[in-house]
Image (cartoon, rainbow, N blue to C red; front, side):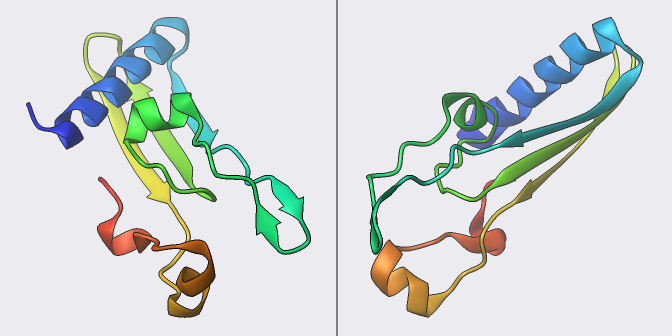
Length: 105
């Protein structure tokens, strides 16, 4: 099983747990925020473990939105990952960003 399938399967398992309690809903999961060290630098970034478990995405400023419906045995899941866009100027200072096109699905 490749890595993207592992993360997709984990999102399906979360959808099953949510469907077991309700008839569905929307889950919004965000990354950990960046923490400023001083006015022009941040502490080294540490991604949120729960977010990484569901997406495999390690960049700050990202949000996963899950739309869940259906039953425990057959959940209907729609997932969207929102992340910062590619920005050549910011990448000079902050490091490379994957951007929406290269972010995992």
